[in-house]
Length: 186
Image (cartoon, rainbow, N blue to C red; front, side):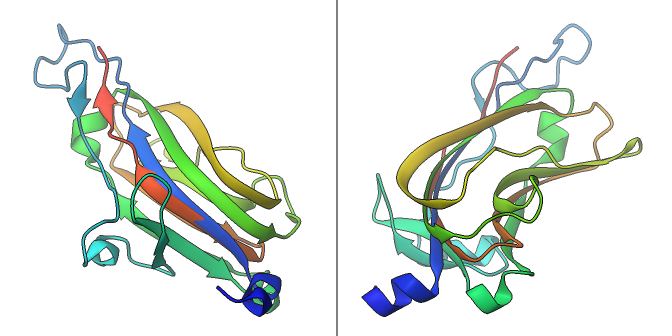
């Protein structure tokens, strides 16, 4: 990347790992995930890695691997968003507590208009009781690869769970190199 681009764009690199640490009452539902069950993993190494991550992403240099998911949002676009997302298998994680962990790097992330804006490592959850968007707390500015995590309990009646990565109402760029293996814990 040229120096001029570094001043024009903020970069966020994601190296994601999603761990599903599920607390599931096996006596109530023996068909549910068991402790250590792998639900989802992504390393962005395949040539068609972006096919399953629709949205504003490209492949960049990784941290622990060759590639990462790279998202940019130019300063003139800072009132909008640059996002990509991927549905998680909600039927496998209903009633589970999950831990989502990601390696993230960022360049020139602008100030957030509201505390919930900024670099997104978020899970959008839909259920008959409503929608909610738990997310990692990620700052602004520039930083090298750091691990960010957050935990959330998936409602037993959840109808969708979508992992969202990107930039909301900020400029800059970020990268995610690996999504850690989700596993369930009873």
